[in-house]
Length: 482
Image 1 (cartoon, rainbow, N blue to C red):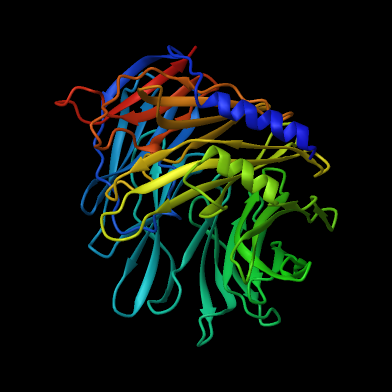
Image 2 (cartoon, rainbow, N blue to C red):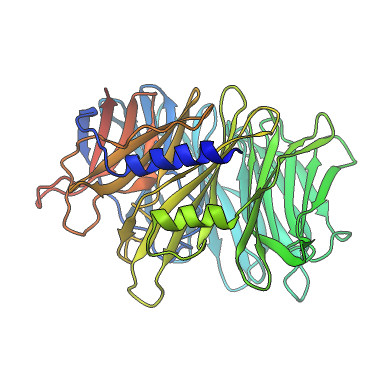
């Protein structure tokens, strides 16, 4: 990464904060929308961050909480005419764990608990008729211990329900579960023996459309990154492992945050943020490509958070003196295999009723050979009350060819609106933020629910917003970009 290129990109980012263009969209359709905010979730790691799923360029389905213990699944067309509505009712202990679709059904996974057990149930709703099938028990596990999990393939044809087996120190020893097809027919029982891996604190499971399972582990006291591929019908697992933490330049470094993404071509990418143990300062970003077909790990050049980089961040955000509260948020792969890793600054000031903040985005790009391509920082300054947390602030990303679209709610130059930034995945060139020109409410109450934002096409976006008129509640909009 050459310093002059970073400087140019930083200048573009500064211009992005001041030069805005309006009248970038029109509302093609609008409809009333009922939504009851989620409560009691981990605000930094939502179980279901996306509640709108595209079916095609003209249809989509939505999952929304309508009452205390009731969720609705609805199908719409691009004129926002509702084709059908189905609902799932749960008791006070029930939660929704996953929302996806298969070839012919909307799929919802729920969790029930009692004093002794936790149970995962699968629900299927026919995409054509809206008819709901009887729920199917997918997994049962003891209530004590770690929460049971769900992994779904990109096309919804494979569903993995799993549970952890931990020791007395809550470190993971084994993982077991059941692999199902999209009709909840069991394909296989799964068991991953991890006894030979020491100090596993986190595990992230992925499943491919073909049913291969990928176990992504952070172990050895947050120092080692290990990924295992388990293929149906093959006894021996393929395992790749690399030491990421340790002693570097006299500093003890450990893994602070990690993220994994399984791409449609079954290639897995992992990214980790590391930090110095003594000072807590961010040390570097390390990105790895796991190519199991070639039995190969490809390491991108380590990106170090130098004093020069930190100084440029501080210049954008005068309230900061160092890198802090940065979390990996997206790993995206373009059509020509350019990889973009996004990290975001997100935090709350602490204490009951304290506001939440979402600020700068750090973007790191790699070409098809995993060589660093460009790096950029996009500054935004979003704030929300504790009651909303990150439900509206932060961002939503969409890749269209070689263009990365980022949608945010912000107030720029006195105009409160949804703003679209477009970044080239080839060279990092970024457009100035363009307001979509929605007449949104700006009275410090909920005006935008990010979870329902999705692209039906490169120019068509579904959003849920609240118009400026006080008597009007949330509205579902289909926006047509110009």
